[in-house]
Amino acid sequence: MALAIFDLDNTLLGGDSDHAWGEFLTSEGIVDSAEFQQQNDEFYRQYQQGGLDIHAYLSFALAPLSRFSSAELNKLHQTFMAKYIAPLRLPKADALIKQHRDADDFLMIITATNSFVTGPIAAALGIDTLLASEAEIIHGRYTGKPTGTPCFQSGKVQRLEEWLAANNKNLDGSYFYSDSHNDLPLLKVVDKPVAVDPDDKLRAYAVEAGWPVISLR
Image (cartoon, rainbow, N blue to C red; front, side, top):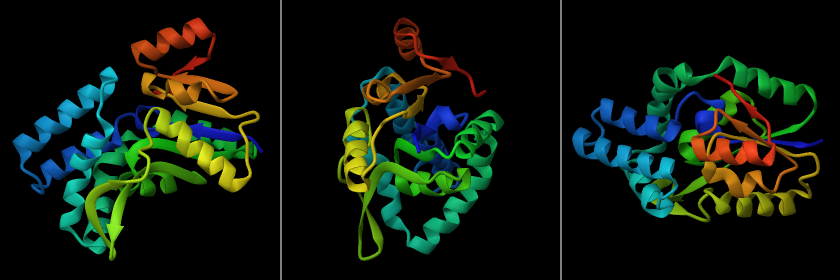
């Protein structure tokens, strides 16, 4: 059983779920629209350029969660899934997941986006395991702070290595699909890296390295 590992945003989805969550909070009037949207867009720009301070971003993105109970958050997320995530689903991505499932591969998403946003998305996609940036929870409520190693850049490799050791698995025959140059540390350690609708930096690296370049759009 080989690992089939996927990035989520702009890979399995035709957009960024983390950025979309920010847009959802703005549209629902949950956060100050002008200030929050400006910061959300700026962090996304930094991510695209490879200069994101992941700790600062997670603190920003997770702060609104502390204002709501788990029941309230679950209700908000259901609305978010219907309004923002459903339109981002890609038939070709669903077909690729099915291809690996039919091959009895173990399906995993590794994403920098926090597990509150991505957990229900991974479940809807039928993914076996999710590794994501984690939000601190105390007494059943989100504190608005990140915890643990952020699942970003080299942190994805660290989190995966910890998971492999804990689950007695290895990377023999493993795949990793990603759109972003931020994922080069992990793309370089799997057996079968695949660039998916890649950004310019990743496309150039993939072409030089002889990696497959595919589109799921």
